[in-house]
Length: 141
Image 1: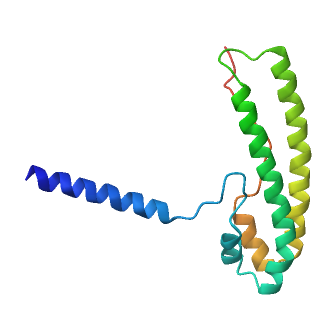
Image 2 (image 1 turned 90 degrees about the vertical axis):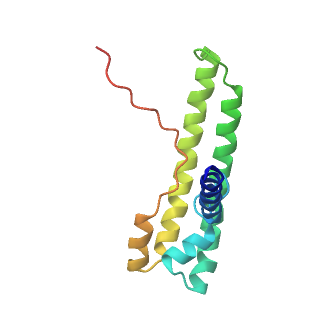
Image 3 (image 1 turned 30 degrees about the vertical axis):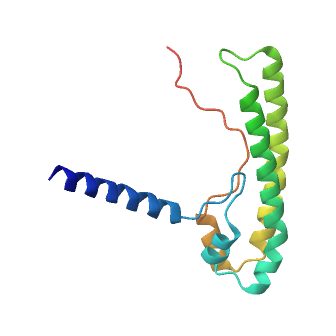
């Protein structure tokens, strides 16, 4: 009986892991996988070609931001940040703001290539974002 329960538990865990592994996820630093975008918006072959340029630019910026974020995390040590680290962080925030503007422009270019129903579908998908968001803290008493 114990062996049967153990076997069922292992089988269930394996099935869940296999199902999770089948879900496509975009590589780190990507907005959405192009296949997902094509499928979700039902892009025509002509639209796919037209969207490819802005899509590639969005993902290039997203990848650059992910690399910068990873490098910053590696440089962080324990304890409060030094004044130099704070300056670097503020400079990076400015860079990320400029990156977000580039992404917003390319996102707008993609929107212009879509039909109205496709734009409505795009609005439901997660928007590409690189902005470093500060966590909101509850007010101190």
